[in-house]
Image 1 (cartoon, rainbow, N blue to C red):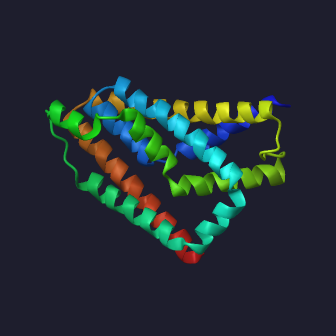
Image 2 (cartoon, rainbow, N blue to C red):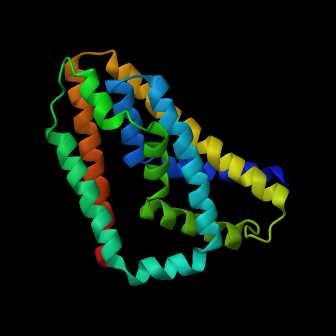
Length: 210
């Protein structure tokens, strides 16, 4: 029974990490512009950020839910940011021989900080975890701070490895694209841009309906 907490954490993290988001894009972009080793630094730090985010949502689920419902301007800002990034990637052109020193100066200073901050400072994912925890408590089993420590430990282990597995697969995809032609990289950037624009419009529609 207690292993169900591990499986729950693993599956919930994978489902939450599958949609293309800021961390996924950072992993893909770093893989293409630099290498998989540096992208993996973002991945392992993002896993830690995801655990803290899930713990934060578990601790403050009721308060956070009310906060986001009463402050929809935060969601609106997130939507605009996603839309702006999407448009940027849609019109971005790949440089066939990027300046590695320039790239390192821009995004190579702290992969761990980048991965952690992109994963943790992510209000839409907080909402996702709030909903996931609420559904778990309603339909599956109790998942609160009063849950036995062993069960919580397994759950958060599942969250960590679920995030890492998903981002690792994104990194492999980015590595495959980096070995192809520049045209393929441009195509990848367009896919990322279109995905982000679709996500922003979908979130905007949900916010408008709500």
